[in-house]
Image: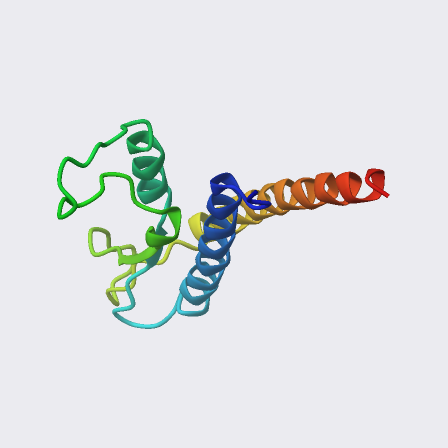
Length: 133
């Protein structure tokens, strides 16, 4: 019996990605006046969406040397990408403070929602344990 299903692993990886996004956004804000600094983003949502959409495909190995189609959720890691496409200031810096503050707020809401889901899972486990006494 597994107390922590794959959905819990998705929550765990998403929390890690949200924490990383918070650090990256804070770094962008801290470097708002640094010449030639390029803003960065954490690319986890696309990786997660790909993992979820491919999860419905079931694979059957006809040979033990074949690679499995379905990967574990833990193998999907967030990637930090640098935004080279825009330029807001004459010094080469492309950090937009309004956008970064909005991203900070959005990420905080996302993180709070994820922690609520994790807390709900642990509350369910606590209820099952207490009812079993």
